[in-house]
Amino acid sequence: MRIILLGPPGSGKGTQAQRLVQRFGIVQLSTGEMLRAAVAAETPIGLKAKDIMASGGLVPDDVVVGIISDRIEQPDAGKGFILDGFPRTMPQAEALDELLKHKHMKLDAVVELRVNESALLQRVETRAAETRARGEDVRIDDTPEVLIKRLAAYRAQTEPLIHYYSERRKLLTVDGMMTIEEVTREIGRILHAIGAVDSKASRKGLLAKRTVKKAAQRAPKSAGRGRLAAKKAAKGARKAVKAASKAIRKGGKKVVTRPAKKLTKKRAKA
Ligand code: AP5
Ligand code: MG
Image (cartoon, rainbow, N blue to C red; front, top):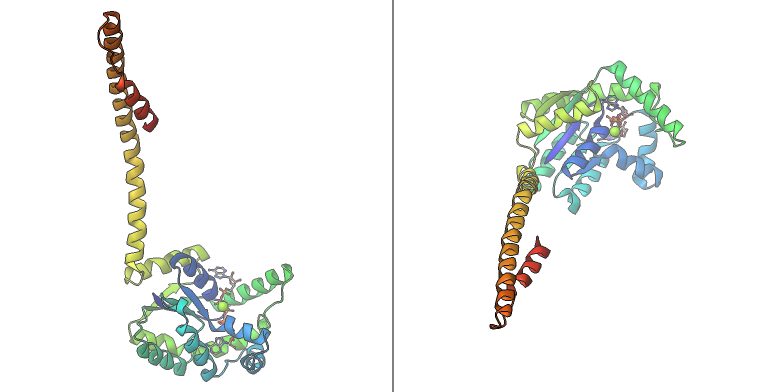
């Protein structure tokens, strides 16, 4: 499965991407996370991106396209991926089309998370407060002032992608104002509906579940059959012992009480 999560800052792209990673076992490719790692490691890309990110602007297209192009090559992206925060401009979307075409990969869907602007501000402020409370470094762009700039960049450069993917019949819009759980459920539902979810994998999962269930249903029956067989064997053994003692009493031939041995084995099995 290959999908894009599209939405303004704070709409829940990262949150939902992580939940989809757990559910479908594919990788999250977040340009924001990769750039933050580059900034922290002070790599040449990080040094280039630092001030742009702090001001709420967008990092040059060639930089992010280069990052994504390299990342898609990695073996763990072979099973599928969730693009979180990429593409963000028309040139990025066109570059992605080329990249996927070149690699013979198909994009399944673009999931747009729609959230009110007042809720976005609230969410970003909450995230900053929670990060601070954990004693961790707050994202440099998680302030109301920078958020306004990030929103302006989104409107001017990213929103046109809604039309771009809608025209290509790839766009699926989800109400991002619902709870986190509800949004995840809705994304899962629409991905199933369009057949983007690897049905082989889910069929395998379903079959495995059914096999376990059937075995569990059969277990009491076979246990019952085992008990019945043991009962029969015990009856046979008692008969054999009786016959043997009768024969001994009569001074007849020695009788080997094999059924009793069989009974012990069967009991052990049961
Ligand atoms: P990036 O890291 O991509 O940031 P962003 O798009 O601005 O979005 P956020 O990460 O802030 O929000 P999110 O949508 O992931 O929401 P989240 O799940 O965290 O980019 C940062 C910067 O890097 C850019 O400004 C740019 O400079 C640069 N950059 C990155 N990619 C680039 C590209 N392709 N091109 C150029 N430059 C690029 O949720 C937010 C909060 O809300 C969390 O606390 C969460 O718990 C909460 N929340 C989530 N869902 C819900 C819900 N349903 N209900 C209530 N709370 C919720
Ligand atoms: Mg994010």
